[in-house]
Image (tube, rainbow, N blue to C red; front, side, top):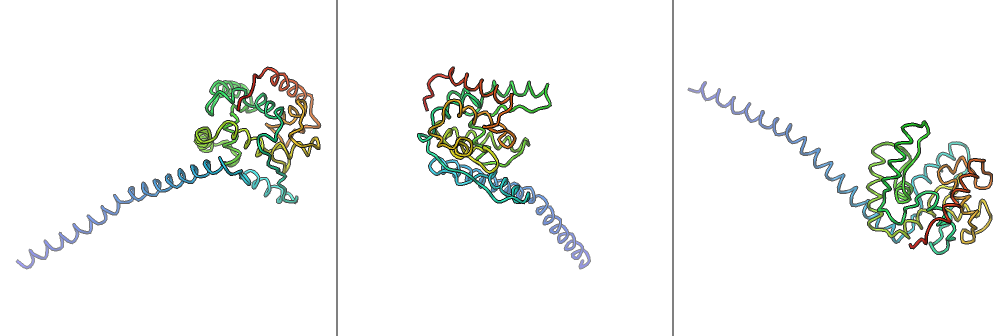
Length: 253
């Protein structure tokens, strides 16, 4: 009888151990789910706070500025961030028109994405070794202000997410203002005010059509191209931008 009781006791003890180990095993997915849930909530909350905050506060720096600064230091150069913020009304209308004509002619019409431009870019990229972008000004602001350099699917997905937030909480006027103040314009040069001073020795408020087009033409590759020493290709692009500036109707921001 005592032996029988002992066996039952051993079985119940081993059963408890198995149930504990099983509960620990099945508890791991729940823990992982909770961790990812917490990460998602934090990311969503902080990103929303950042976008809403930058609707009223001018971004003091971007990740690209920091990255470029470290690249300069590693190359033995001094840390340089030449950036002078100018409010929307302090920037020449010529510059705003040049930006729209060069980068995003449907800027005032779309809600963050130009699907026709994206489709054309995909088609051209399938037949060309040189990648052609189809990003709108809103997408570029999302990338320039909130993200790092790169072309990964993850980064593009996060860029799309920030683009939706920006289009939801910012006006088109604010998007253009941030774009023209944060865009990289040369080695350590950021924004059209710093670019205008560096290339034409005048404030961005005084830029002519030709000068604004010369600045806009180097938007895609500011570290390789120069607004004051353009190649034949850049001069042709400048001509096309000026032509498109004439074609654009009133820009009602």
